[in-house]
Length: 137
Image (cartoon, rainbow, N blue to C red; front, side, top):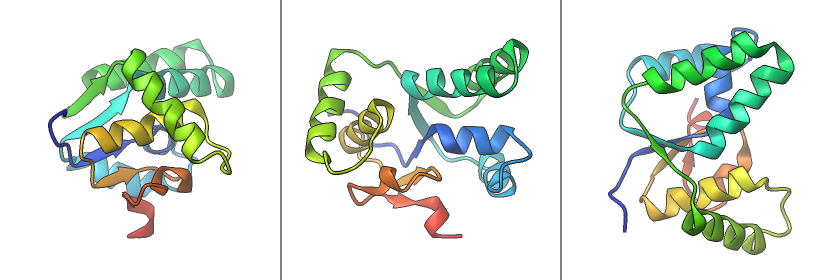
């Protein structure tokens, strides 16, 4: 089993942190200013990059990737066959929900890394009982 990490970061939290027009911007700006050990996946980074590319342009999308490279203490989990298979199991387990593969892999990673808290604005990331930060504020 992977080592325990306190907080998983979803795409919605990263977007809210960067995008000043997001209604959760102030919350995530404050949280990231004193961040605990964080973990996310390469799928989350790809999803965020695509969001900024579609919503803004290539420059903003590349700035988002640069933020991820510089963000400490963020550990990036590469999504390989084990993570993919775990995500597919989550998709099947929660087949009554409109989960994306990115969210399902996130649920799997939170389970395997012993994550207790999730930074996300998406209620799907709380399906396994992990605490969502937006429910606390």
